[in-house]
Image (cartoon, rainbow, N blue to C red; front, side, top):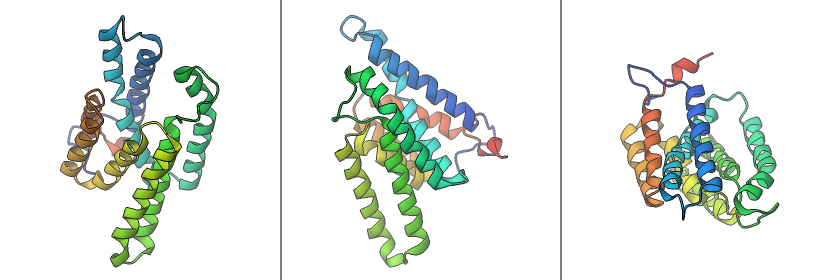
Length: 208
């Protein structure tokens, strides 16, 4: 894993805590801080919160490689998506059910299904067909995220893909994540800070 440096600093559990804390700060800013009367506080919390999603995507890819059962992993994600939907809709839209927006676990589940498809393609499909089939799988995942109106939409799917494809190429990864973060707007650009934590991730500290 190319992310680790000689001075290892962050374990998987530490990254999970960083992702959770930044996500909570983001939600506090979004739900409780009025942007019109407290813009500095609002954008500060939302900016810090942008770090959360790239870390979650990175951890999802790590989980894909190290989980004992990918099927159970996918099942748990869909369960979280189902359980989280009503609280998500109540918190952000003030209603029990909002068909026009789905929570981030839907995006993560779609992304994990994409990774499963790509992995199987690499294992069982001949070299001549791998690229077109893989592109098709990615395209279907992106369309699914758009049609489901899941949080982060196709951008989230592409970010998961970036961490998967760039796992052994730091330059490819950093350029991809920077492009995806900046491409979503100035606020999402703060998500690129997550690359610092990813760069100092120490997979060996999670062994066993």
